[in-house]
Each structure stands twice: as structure tokens, then as C-alpha cells.
Length: 321
Ligand code: ADP
Ligand code: MG
Image (cartoon, rainbow, N blue to C red; front, side, top):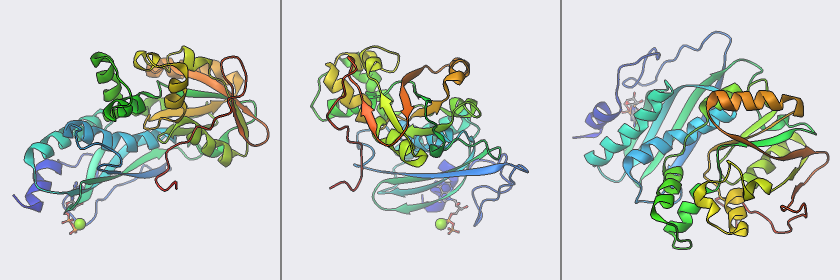
């Protein structure tokens, strides 16, 4: 089997909404009149973004999930994606698992694979997603207003917890580890919630590098500060049973700076609190209020007694010294 058979066999399906999909020099897409295009790219590099032990099916899922998470953070509806793949060798079992995981998630969101590139090299997966959003409706990092409540979807810290178990730094009972590992290897992008928050949230970002660091991007883009409380780390839907096994200080580290969560962090005016809960219920995702946007610059984290936490929560940065 060569490159073109590989593409035909594992990555070519009949075009659905695309005018032209895989097989020509360009894919063609007819945009809906009047809609804005939302575009995002994320690359996954072996050893950097995933462990070589991950099942190919989960890796296929995650490669698309992290991209759909970016669309969700903007409130965009997924349409299509391209896949640039660098593979060390032609391994059919791997390709079967990978494409199955990839297309299962793609089909669940009606997101069509319309093209890509395939080369030999170190394992590296780069996806670009295209989505649409009505003009003016996109959720941006820059919209947070003083007085807004700050919310997160789902739960945070589990992916980091699983990573620390893999690294041998934490021990966890088998069932709890499997649950945390699933969150790391097969995150669920909050596609429906992102769209449901249009017109309700003032600002939104997806948590990929760590809650505090990603909130920092919102604060900087919006020119505001924030106070984050931590009572929810002691007890709330945002902390999984696995994470509850850890003492509070380690929990704080993983929840606030763990990364790889792919949950939405968003802000909304207090008078939108009920609308937020309704959107969350409609999408079957819990949301937890974790703090409030304040005037001025800076971010303060308060412990469960309301005392400022002095230590810093450092998020992931590929080039941090
Ligand atoms: P070109 O040489 O014109 O760049 P390629 O030979 O790289 O074209 O690819 C042939 C066709 O297969 C193109 O339509 C391209 O978009 C598609 N393609 C290549 N790799 C992938 C992939 N991994 N997934 C989906 N489509 C792919
Ligand atoms: Mg090419």
C-alpha cells in the first residue's frame, strides 16, 4: 500500500456538504450566505501532547476534539476539517483505530473531513477546523465585563491527575485511574454548550493549558481583573471523585493549573445566571461558578477561608525557560 491507497482507504469518504472533498488539489466549500467562518488549527506531537502508549482510536478522537474545543469556545458550529498527518510507518492497525476514533467524533458533530496531507516522519497530527457563527455572535476572550461571574463547564484537573499517575507521582485505585485517563485521552469538546452560550456569555476560552493561565488570557484581552474563590475545589461537580482522593493543595494545583481539560471557561453578567444554568441543563453539562471579574488588573485566588493564596499557578508554556 502506498500514500494514495492509504488516503483512499482511511481518509476518503463521499463528500456530503462539501462541493469537493478529498481528492483534488483543493477542497471546495460553499459558505452559508451571511455567516462568519471560524477557523482554528491545533497540532499534536508525540511525546509533547500525547504518550506513545495511547490507543490509536483515542488519539484519533483527541486530535479532533481539541480542535472542536476551540470552535466551541467561540460559539461556532463545526462544519469541516483538514488533516495533516506525519506517520513514521504505514501501520494499518494504527490507521484503522485512528480513523475510527476520528470519524466517530466527526460524525457525532456532522463535521466533514475535506482534505489534508500525508507524509512520512515523526508522529504528528495537525488538524484545521472550520466552523460558522452568525456575525457578531462569536464568543471572544475580550468581552469580559467588571462584575461578571466566572464559570467553568464540566470538571477540571483529571487529565493532569492521570498524567501524574503515568509519571509515577500519584497512586490511584484502578477504576478511578481509568476514569481520569479517559478524560486525558478522550476529552469531550463542549460543542453544544459553546453555541448555547451565544448571547449569554460575555467572554469565553477553552481550558487547554491550565485554568488560571487561560483565565489570564481572558483578563488581559478584556482589560479586567478577577477574584477566583476555591470552595468549589473542596466540593463541587467540577472536581471528580478521582481528584477528591487528593489532599486539597494537590487538588488545587491540578484543578487550577493542570491543563488538557478542554472545558469552557466563560464569564456572564449576574442577571444571566439563570440563562447560564438553563443552557447547561439543555446541554447536559454541569457549570460551576468559580469567581468574579473585578476592576483593574490582576488575578487573586482566595482559599476556602477567603485568604489570598500566595503561590503561583503556572500554566503550560512550550517555551517557558
Ligand atoms: P497535492 O499533491 O496536490 O498536495 P496530495 O497528494 O497531498 O495532493 O493529496 C491528495 C488528496 O488527498 C488531496 O485532496 C488532499 O487534500 C487529500 N489528503 C491527503 N492526505 C490526507 C489526509 N490525511 N486526510 C484527508 N485528506 C488527505
Ligand atoms: Mg499534498
